[in-house]
Amino acid sequence: MLVELSIRDFAIIDRLDLRLSPGFNVLTGETGAGKSIIIDAVSILLGARADSSWVRAGADRTRVEGIFSLTDTQRAALAPIIAEYGLDDDAEDLILTREITVAGRSQGRVNGRAVTAGVLSAVGELLVDIHGQTEHLSLLRVRQHIEMLDRYAGLGQQRAQLAELVRQVRAVRGELAGLLRDERELARRQEMLRYQVDEIEEAALEVGEDEALLQERVRLVNAQKLMDLAEMVHATLYDPGDDQRGAIDLLSEATGSLHALIKLDPRLAAQEGALLAALDSLEEIGRAMRDYRDEIEGNPDRLDEVEERLTLLNSLKRKYGDTIAEILAFAERASTELETIEHRSERMEALGAQEAKLLKQIGQAAEALSAARREAGDRLARAVETELTELRMERTQFYVELGRSEAEDGCPVGNARYAFDATGIDRVEFLISPNPGEPLRPLVKIASGGETSRLMLALKSVLAAGDAVPTLIFDEIDQGIGGRVGEIVGRKLWGLTVANGHVDHQVICITHLPQIATYGDAHYNVSKRLVGDRTSTLIRPIDGEERVAEISTMLGAETDLTRQTAIEMLEHTVAVKNGAAQRTPA
Image (cartoon, rainbow, N blue to C red):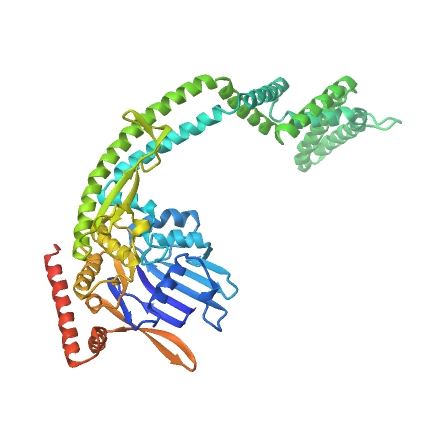
């Protein structure tokens, strides 16, 4: 629900801060004071088209901010949008902000995160329904009619089951479409995949062989140098030449001398083991150098083989991956795709059978859903007409039209095939005939501002229990109605706010009728003030004597008679509310 509304430099509003009640809020005041401008500001906040003309003269920008409290149900409804755009910062409230500069630039934010006007609109549609001559009027969005009807009929579970079948058939059709691509393209693709798979398989790759080959190439290219170095190490240990004695001979002689020392002085015995170990190590190194020298040989043929293999590996890496592991993974994917293409006939046959089975199930589910909608549509029409009668639109006919379109690729229902989506095969639209003798026509094309507001009130009264939008704003709902109907409208507006003993919706209503205003749980007076040579809008909550005076003024003029009438009207509405509360089960 809309908890707080802040407006800066919007039209004739310089600064306005409004804290709203969770129940029925009424805004009253003289014509031209700026009541409807407040609703325009809310429309801008909810993503309506930005226009620099809204910026107050002399200001560089206008700013509108709304703070919304959310129930768990409302948060769940917003969850997909919040997740998609990364808007969730775990804040308890949802804060929407919109700024428009004098240059016409617009910036929207949700919980501080910059978003487009489209995102603001998507979020706003789940938060506020504005009923007046604005684009936010949900009754005039035909796509919402099926949602209203299904909520009224309680068809959520059936809708979900059908939507899952539709998701499955779309996946099957997507795979079929891939298999049904142009045969020549598939043939070319098959030929290329076969070449790629064969080329990689013929290479008989082993992970790590490229590193081993690089090391071997280094040894082959430097074979002579490696032999010379190994020979030098071996000779230094055994026979340096030029009548010099090798390191091992010298160490052996030192071992003998140490042994003689130990015989004379046993304290040196600990050194003999270390010297013998050093001798063993040098002898082992000498043998290893000899063996390594003997292994090394210049082999031009083997070097050619290694170079050729490395060239092949590098060629495959350029085509299929940076490593042998990536090349093998590419080959596995190509093999899978190749197998799919080569066996597409069998797969297409299986998918076709699966598609036919799913379409049959969709047809059965959609037909059952349609039957439920037809029955619920008749009940909804009767209920709405009953409400309209109370609202002095007793001659208005209301009708829920269910249409469907045949399509070759549709689901079978009876002897025909019909186009379908996740909602089924029905196109739902509300039709009305405001006057006797006139044919039923789409609501969008025939209803006036006052009629749509009363129609929406009638619909909301019927659909209140299943309506997920928490805040309802009514502007011009009292257009063309008198005091007697106004009392009924006021009672119904207040009735939208309560269900089962608790607040169900928040209602905000701009009205000129005291019969409606007296039902407000919170009453705000909107007025103009002149500061210097500038006009500004002022809004303030009123209660007690101030509210009595406001109702008196709305009755015509503040006199003793109108004051007494205002008091009686306020007492009457209190009695009506208390009576309704007593009838509502706890």
